[in-house]
Amino acid sequence: MYNDQESIVYGCIKDVCGALGDSERRKTNASAMMSLPDADDWPFLCRDMFSLPVVENTMSQYHTDVMHFGASYKAVEYEWEQWLAKFEDLLSGMYWVSATVHLETELSGTHTFTWESNGSYHAPGSGGISVRCEWSHEGGLHI
Image (cartoon, rainbow, N blue to C red):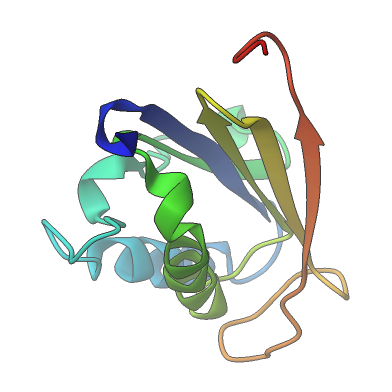
C-alpha cells in the first residue's frame, strides 16, 4: 500500500536584496509565509516547514535572500497537483526571482520543479507563474 512510501519535499525561494524597498519586500514575504496555517489540510503546506531569513546586518549579506523549506510526507506524490497549487498560491503573494522544489519519492525517483520570474522579479499579484519540471531516477524498484 502506498501509505508506507515516504516522500521528501524541500527547496528554496530566492529574492534579490540590496535594492530599494528591501525592508518592504522582506516584510511581504515573511507575512506570506507566516500566514500559512500551523497544520493544513492534506497535502500539508504549513509555516513550520519554512525558514525565514534573519537579517541582522544588511552589509554582511550578498545579493540574494534565500527562504528554504522542507518536510517529510507519506506518498505526497499522489496528491502532488494539490500541493503544487498551494505552493503556487503562496508564490503569487510574494516577491521572488526563482523558486525550486525537489520531490524525492521511493518509487518514481526525484523530480525538480523550477519557477523563474518573467521579468527581473515577481511581485505579489502580478501573475505569470509557470513551472518547469525535470525528472531523474536513481535506484528504486527493479523488475
